[in-house]
Image 1 (cartoon, rainbow, N blue to C red):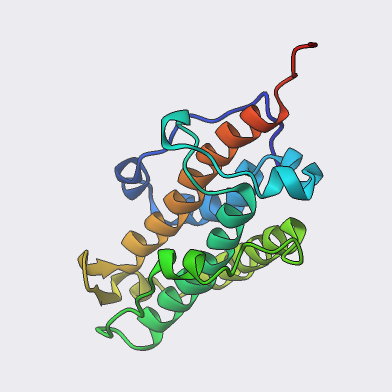
Image 2 (image 1 turned 90 degrees about the horizontal axis):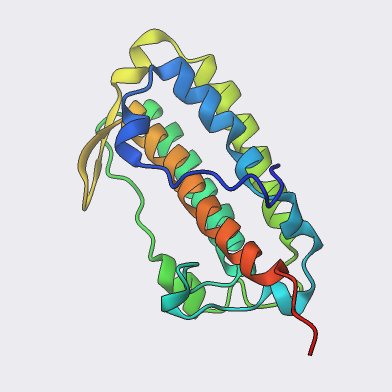
Length: 184
């Protein structure tokens, strides 16, 4: 995990799409290192602090963001595995806002370390599986309802980008939450 002084540049999905498959697997595997360890030290109040749109930190709280990432890892891992097992299948869809609206990530009982553990474990398991695939598996394709046909490298680059994209917003949230408060 990074420290709050090492804020990464905002990632672009197209940059990741250009990586060779083995490099993409390595980047996917190391994705959790982009999550700032400071998030594990937040109080419940800080973890649940939402942000106004004009802050540039995204609107979700840190707890919501990490819960979303944990669910996204479950979905992306399932999609990749199903794509290889059932080429041509339609990818399972989900409404991320419905999960937020249902309050899935709004309780202090949902601990941030648990979300981080899910993300880390699925990345490790998924990268080991991906690295062991036969060469032809990279040509597996499935249908995404809004993005059209996607290959395994397309989906892997998206999953890699997705975590890095949200880590960028997490860093901005943490900067705001942990900034020194001037004395009164």
